[in-house]
Length: 89
Image (cartoon, rainbow, N blue to C red; front, side):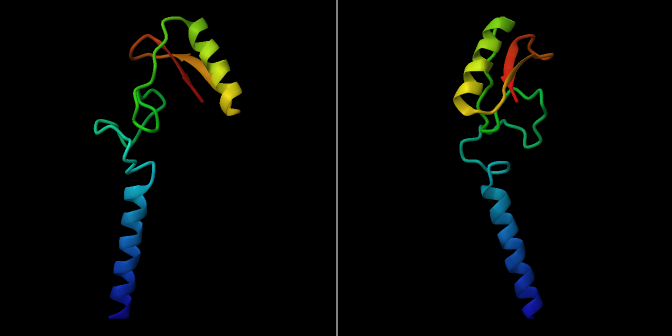
């Protein structure tokens, strides 16, 4: 009986952690965001749409500004799906 109770508690904790974690249950996430995001996903980790830039220069300028602001290296890349430039890690 004790084993069953412990098992139920462990499962409940795991469900809670996965549901509320930023990867699986972030309340800011848009409903259409895939849980298995790829590098070419058109949403940020918070589920917001990525901003597309028309030129490489615009994207690189934004990447430099974001790197200075956050301290995390960012770079510009050409998206194969939408043919625009995005900024990412």
